[in-house]
Amino acid sequence: MKTNANLKTITNPQRISVPRIKSAKWWVYHLLVGGFALLMLYPVIWLLMSSFKPSEMIFVTAKSLIPDPWILDNFSKGWEGIGGNSFGVFIKNTVVLVIFTMIGQVISSAFIAFGFARMNFFGKGFWFAIMMVTLMLPYEVVMIPQYIIFSKLGWLDSIKPIVIPAYFGHPFFIFLLVQFIRTIPRELDEAATIDGCNTFKIFYKIILPLIRPALATAAIFSFYWTWDNLLGPVLYLNSPDKYTVSMALNMFLSNETVSNWGAMFAMSIVTLIPVFVVFFLFQRHVVEGISTSGLKG
Image (cartoon, rainbow, N blue to C red):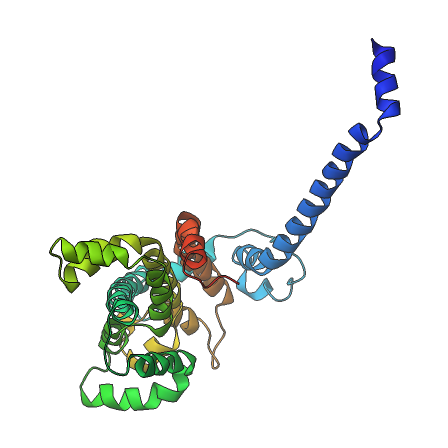
């Protein structure tokens, strides 16, 4: 029997070479992908390891990843916070800001996207083009006029200038949701109209449940962009007890005294945890929302 098997492998060598080629491709592919992933993650790994080094040794031993000695003081000192406010206060302020901003951007963008995708009104194409132009407008262009307006309204040193504009929609989310709604057959709207649904019921009972993946995508992006937003809070918040985590991290650095790099790196790791958790829990919704809304390449 062994002789027959050896004869078959000799007369038909492809039965051995094909699996070997596939195995070689598998190893090459995973080595390349793993190496690229390690290259992309190196700054985060360096940040994590530096958070366990003494502050004065971080840049002296920047080429070495392994701390010597290992310390945990950076985390305790960083958590003590700044100005009598612990770092937990800054995290709580950021969470409140993120929740209100995310709710406003997602709900208002869904309303506006439904209007552009399903309703007919005068100048619809013009207003959609204007909306797309605002998507390309840098924030620095509108920063000063907005600051003057909010100053006259008495909204400075509060989260109102950051939260309330979110309830007027976000151009990127509107475009994303418009693309998604256009993939839903209009026959569903007509069937709902025959059953007695008005426009609001069509939006609430038909469209809104069907665009759930795109809404999840918009909510996740809103979370990311608000969580690491620095410019808006720096402009409008003055009281230390209202600062966000991005402002608190910036305050560990000083031009006049010694910067506490260790505490800043340690708290940077702490602020990254919610971002990683949200990404790994909802990454499927991000991919699904983008791939089904016509934004894929």
